Image (cartoon, rainbow, N blue to C red; front, side, top):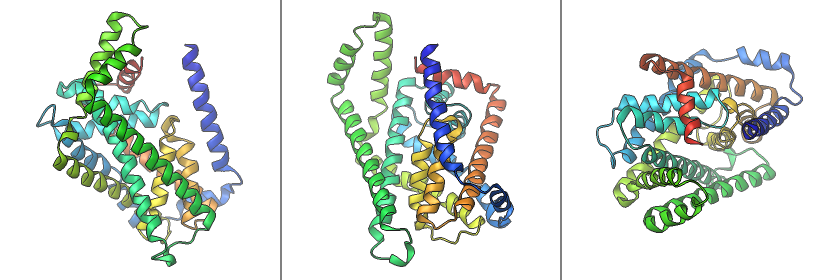
Length: 342
């Protein structure tokens, strides 16, 4: 219990700090006026595009799952993504990252450890593709200087985040490759680390870890890996499209490619385990708009509040509709994630 309260305390402090910097020097009259000054045509289009990533992620996911089970329902894959993101939006700690694979594992009778392994692969490739798109943006800067308006300091900071993202992704990629291709060695090391625990618990955890390694099977096929990379690009180009259209809805006339650094920074903010991405997403969204898109601070606050609200409402409506159809409560899904962390 004490550990839980300590973790919640850290999350609360992180959220408060990010929100402080997000709302710092805000003119609320200006913010409220900006919220309603929206191009309805583009706003409605953004609403339609908002859930698109649930479909593209579901299609991509099949290329990982098929090594364990073929013919997994597309609806169940979409549902698992929607439920996972709903849990992330409502509860702290990003429990949805665990609830998502466990939900599908239950629905399709697939090994839980295997499904968790596929989501680890997903997240690593999300970082890789986001970093790749940001790298293309940085490389194109000297070629098309008229599209880039930020100062050198801002681009130096962006280059730091790009290097950080590439470094994290590369490290994690090599780590899981080592775990997969040296499976027996990895299992023996993990078994050694579990020695202080009871035999029953150690065997249970070791079995899940073995299933997790099986979730990395797709690395054996170069062709499958290539298709998965292409689908990952499609996922993130679709997410970028949503943000770009949303910016157009608020009369921010920028090129599609110019939104790459903004999308990358919102991804950094969203990865911080605050409840519903509150704080981290808001701060980095504002930073991305003011630093790289020449958006005025109060307008950036307005757009961030609006885009976060749209993501939350659209995702949770879909998530709750699916849970209602299945007769499952959100707390039951949350418990899936919590139980797997123990």
